Every structure is written in C-alpha cells, then in structure tokens.
Image (cartoon, rainbow, N blue to C red; front, side):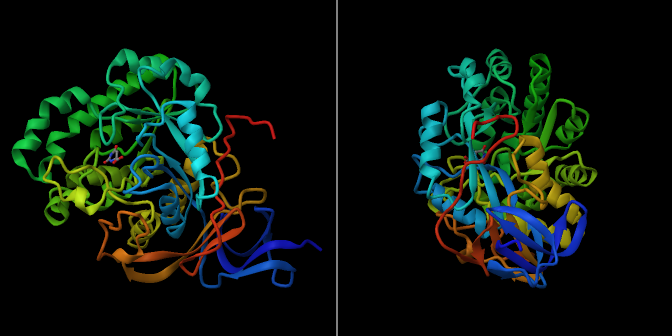
Length: 445
Ligand code: DOR
C-alpha cells in the first residue's frame, strides 16, 4: 500500500476538472493521488474539512529589497509575507542595491534566498544598455525568471529609455521579457505638475495615461521588429487594455489588485501617498476597463507589485515620497473578496494567479492541482470575513493600504511542495523555498 508523506483530507479541491470533494495524497513534494484516502497510511495528515484547496498563488512581480534596502524588506520577511497570504512562488524584481544586472548579482540573490526563503523563488535580471548583448546567455542562468525592462524610471536607477537600446535588449534572447511601460521623456516634461501640486492626487496627471500608452505602443512596435514576446506589467489604462487585447500574438498583460480595488481621486484623498505607485492608480473609467479585461480574459495574470516603503519614507512630502505599496500578503484575500462580491469567478482568479503565470513563464510542475505537479496549495476559508489589521502584515514596513477593510475569503493553511508551511495562520518549521525550474530552460539533473 502506498505510504504518503502528507494526506490533506476532507476538502473541496480546485482541479483542472472542476471543484471536487477529494483527499490529496502527497509523496516527495508532488501530488501522487487525488481520491478517497481516509484509511491510507500517511506520515502527516491535514484536516481541511470545510475549506477549499486552491493551487498556491504564483506572484510574478514582487520587490523584496535585498540586497541594499533591507530596512524596507528582505528575502526572509518578504517570502514569509507571501506564504502567510497563500503565495507559494514569487519572482523578484531587479531594482535592489546594487541592481540585479550581472550573473554575480543574480547568483548572490539565489544564495541569499537558499535556506531563508519561505516560498519558491526566481529573480529577474535587469536590462541596461551595458548588458544588452549578454542577456541571451544570462537569461538562462539558474534562478533567473527572465529579463525586466524599466522603460520609465521608478524606484532605483534601472532605465532603458531609447528605442535603439530597447531593440538591442529585445533582440538578445528568447524568453518573454517583462516590461514596466511608462514614457520617460513625457514624464520628465510633466514632473513640474507634481511639484507644483505637492499632493498625490497629481500623481496620475504627472505620470498620465498617455505616458503609459505611448510606452506600450512603442514597446509593441519594437517587440514586433525583434520578434520577441513581451509581458506588459501593471496595466493601468483603458487604451492599453484594448490595444493589448489585439496583440495576443506578441504580448501578455498583468493587472494588479490595487488598480482593481482603488480609484482616483478618492484613494489619494483617503490614503495619500500610501497609494502612490508607478504606474499610478487612475480614475474610475480606467478601473472599469481593467475589470473588463479581467472578465473577458484579455488580462492574463495578476501580480501584486509588492513594493514596500516604510511609513517614515511615505511621510515625505509628495513627490519626494517613494512609490509603491505592500501587496504580496493581501493578493489572495483581496481577490477572493472580489470573487465573493461577484466581480470575477474563482476559475478566472485561479487562471490569473496560478495556471496563467505557469503558462506565461513556462514554470515547471506548478500552477495546477494534478498528479505529478508540485504540492503547492493555498487552502482557504471562503466563509471567513475579517477586517484587515495592520498586525497581520508580516512585511518589515508593517502596513497595508487595505487596513480596516472587511475581506471575505482568507488563507488558512499554505503547503509548499508537500510541507505545511502555514497551519491555521501560523508559520511552521523552517524556510524550505527553492529556486523555480522552467520548461524553456532545460537543466541537467
Ligand atoms: O510603484 C512602484 N514601486 N513601481 C515600480 O515600478 C517600482 C516599485 C518599487 O520598487 O518601489
């Protein structure tokens, strides 16, 4: 008789064939059996009666600030926040200090994460005009999630502004390139608007919808010329959502929970610089277009763009105040709340947080609950309603823009490759996160 390392019992399970009442038997970190396992021997059992097992969330846009800015976050605290929120894999961005623009900087991040990461991980390499020609080789390095381009400057110094440099980056390599699309030249011209206003309500005027659209249009033209697939991060405008909906042969798109949950000017009046981020949260008409893209399927995935800054830093006068907010821990409860409020289906949510990221980034063995796949689960209670409180936030910067909001649908247990890393909301054991493998980067052994 099969001996399981872990059996999860009594839950409803989100499988590729629909939600079913099943037990899950796990051997060596992978799903071995989906069926009735109440009398089968197992080293450990997890009673999940009344709960729903979802594929662990894959958040392909987080900023964990290590090395160099560890007063805001580090790989331990960031990944701890992740698993407490039902996120089992993260891809981390290169705008650390130093920026992740060399194989040495990438290997350093992988070494720092080993033994300290609570979830699985990969790191983006930042593109620059200096490293463009080497990216073809470097994007295949172990632990590399791919290449990230900042077309507009944000936190940190990474920037690839001009078409010639962008083309060189896009021509050197074959994996999907992730892009922050805002037009630097236009934003430089418009910065006085922000300075004159001194209030973050001006943020979507400084970094306006045309800045975003211009960059996305240029990017698509250059990607077509280079024959490269691109992934446009944190889409914010109606025009980009419509445009990208016509470019599925070349580009995919990400939306964030915060662009779906907040809108201008209300959010800036209520939350000030806390909701200042790049690209900005915009007005209701743009927010509705993003929801439409979620509902019609044109928006491929959700990413949290977890970008922590301390409350002291956020208290600087606008526009010296830094852009970005926490989000990796709240991604799932915020989006489950939207599901329970009827804004999207559970199927769409899982598509955008698990199977979608796995498809886009060619992640091996993740993104679905099926035999042979990694046993990565977010086990949630759809009946639990609770106010989001600051003390729940594990991020070093210790705040969330959702504080005080009633969220419905909460992560209870998190399982990473068969290990229960969060049980009843409490962290368990030691960090066991590993670097992610990719189907488009074959590795030996
Ligand atoms: O608001 C943002 N914050 N947008 C970015 O692109 C970077 C991020 C950060 O790292 O703070």
